[in-house]
Structure formats: structure tokens, C-alpha cells
Length: 231
Image 1 (cartoon, one colour):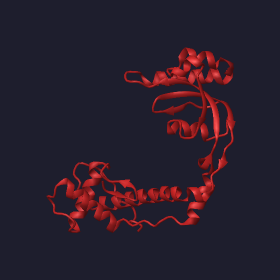
Image 2: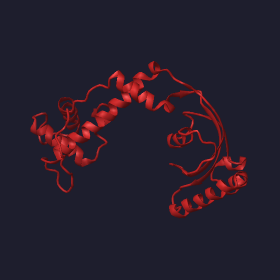
Image 3: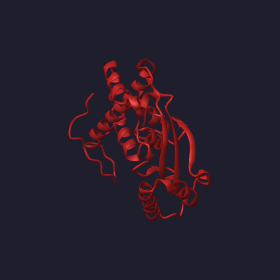
Image 4: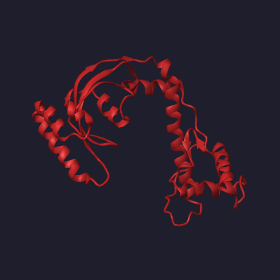
């Protein structure tokens, strides 16, 4: 699969692949009628040649580390309960969200009703245990759920619904056990890879936008870039 700094190209929309294919043809990296396998190789060569992104410096990595320290905690635990309003095929989403919001408003005023509402309304098996999820640590939950519950220091019934791939959650955080900050040296490589991917993605988007001003992609509206690709 063709990538630039970890950004997949084969998974991009067909119009983007066509832009890249046309550019590869112009540069003589591939014949106009080449099959898809050769196209992938040519696109990879094209990106290696024309989309250059700098490696993040240690200072940039340290700034990211300082700004996102909550993401680099180890040993952090919390005890939580939830009520799941599951989004399943055939379930109308808007009425379901309204019901979840109404229940959240009630529990924000009357948190002592949480256990009863969990037994009555939750679509999760934990509902039969008053919504209890037990002890949770990072890496044990769906990413969007984890971000919501570990991304703040709030306790009690959280002020907003937590939206995940499973549906809408009302969450009560009963207790938090603080963790310890992982040393920068232990996460340096991970941070550098994350920053490189972000820069690579932006560079690829800029490059494709530049090509869109000149390339022939039929039936697709692609705005040309306002400025040239920053190498």
C-alpha cells in the first residue's frame, strides 16, 4: 500500500488516486494504461520524490509532551458506571438521543436515581448491575469512551453524553486514582511518529490540492490550492 509518513494513499477517494496517477504519468513514472499494481508502485515513487516532510525535532516533541501530559499518564484508574442507549440497525437516532438527553438532565439533578435508571434503560449487560463498569484503566475501553472519561478530572455524573460507536452513554465517575507521568524518553519515539504522520498528512493534502488545479479528473469538484506545496 502506498503511504507518505504513514498516510495511506490506496484508501483515499478515487479522485485523489486519479490525481496522483496523472502526475505519475506526466513525470514518466508509469505508462498511461498501466494496471493497478503498477499504479501503486508509481504513486509511492511519486510521493517519495515530491512530498517531502521534515522529521519532528526533539524540541517539537517536548512541546507536544508538555501540552498533552494527560495522554502520558500511567497507572491512572477510575471507577465508573454508565447507562447505554445503543444505536442499532432500525433504531431512530434522534428520538434515542432525546431520550438519553432527558435522562441525563434528570440524573444531573437526582444522581441517586442512577442505579434504577441503569436497570430500567441501559442496553448494556452492566445495567443489571446498576451500570457498574468496575475499575478502568487506559486501553481497556473504546478510544472515544476513554477520551471522554480520562480527558478530564470531573467526578459524579458527567455533564454531557458520551458518544461512541455503540451509542449514547450517560457516565458517572465515582472515584479517580491519579497516575504518574511517563518520562519523556519513554514516549519520545511514539510522539515523533505521531507528529510525523500529522505533518505527512497535511503535506499530502496540500500536494493533492495543488494538483487539483491542473489535473483532469472528470465529474469531481476539487478546489485548487491557494498557495504552492510547502516542501
